[in-house]
Image (cartoon, rainbow, N blue to C red):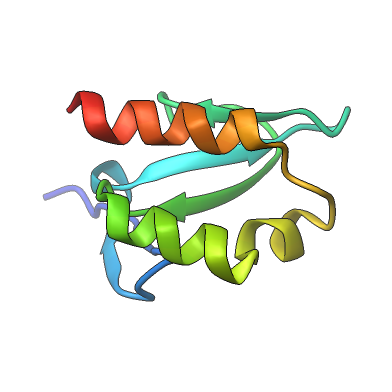
Length: 86
């Protein structure tokens, strides 16, 4: 049986399987993207696939502290689109 890695959601702080979460990655150039494969290189952060967790992350500015940079609104809008489309 293969061991599935656990990651913690930045919104609700609950541990879940890595494949159940959405990964946000910051690469070496400082560009932030949504990583659907989970294999992109760079600093990663995870959130649950629900809008409540995303709103908590936005309100607390937790992504900005994790990546140590200002997060543009279009990145948050892309995340909202990914969550709502499911």
